[in-house]
Length: 425
Image (cartoon, rainbow, N blue to C red; front, side, top):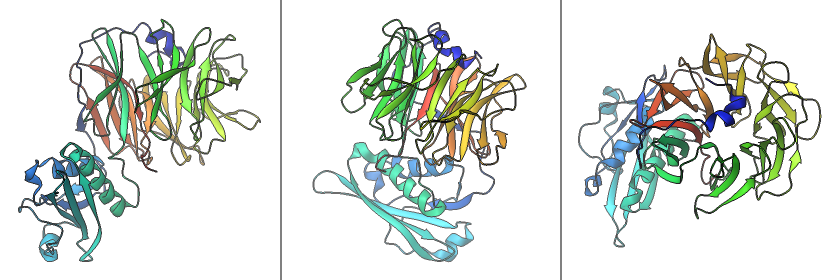
């Protein structure tokens, strides 16, 4: 693994592999939570009008989270108005039950209703009614899974969120966006030149990234609804590592226009450049804290790549990591309490997390070439890139290290993941 502070130069030399346009990520769950809540999801009455994709997606979402154990519900469809036989479901081992229906509407759309039950308390605890088209069936299923997850865990579900990543194939790079489960992948940009460092705007409407289309690294902001984009930074030398401010108005970037890689702030329209750091080392990989008060970044100013924190209002820069000689790619959790990063551990590069209050560090992964960690918007999972068999794959791990997933596109090289924000905050 190359030092990340020189990754821009390395990216220009990346080799190519076989192409898979419209490729879907497949997910392999390689671990699960120690304590999982048993839940039954019956087939919804009427869903065969379209397909069984509705309940199969709900079940897959909940199972993939590592928080639930699916109880066999193969007793036929059950709608939301049918009173459950609570003793029977209790004997089957279920603590919760979801049942529902799908009906056709006069305007050609469909309406899906569901109800969630607490089996132990023998009562309904939630439900939802959603009108949708057949093309919105998966999105409807993700919303129902999000509702179930939040009702039963108290945390927002992330099944309706999206992820961005770069697929490298024969002479071609695609910046793709898919559902959080890897399905419904769509290319936002295709290029013969490398694309790196995608970063979601806080409202999920835009992506900033670095493209080498101009034969050098240039930072763009890309509007996902219109497909229009504009250059944010194209200064002399390298322009890299964009990171959005929490209000979406500014980007922290890394420029070499004045010498070594240093941190700068620039407005999202490309105006108003301001220098943030002035060190004799290489400063790179900036990330805002969720409250916007600090910039975390990687620097070799102390003799080896380590993570530092600089207050935006002024004040002393603080070194954050001390264990080991290589700690890079800081990613603060959405609540600002935890920092994910990549650490060199026994010659292997792994994803670790630090409790910022106690400074305790836990290495989460058992792979060897991890990079680009990215928190899910509820802070529960971390998406990252790693390498298996010489090929880039995406993987995810829970913040306690217990739940592990691998997401792969067959015969393609996948890198640079970024987990998008909650939509409709």
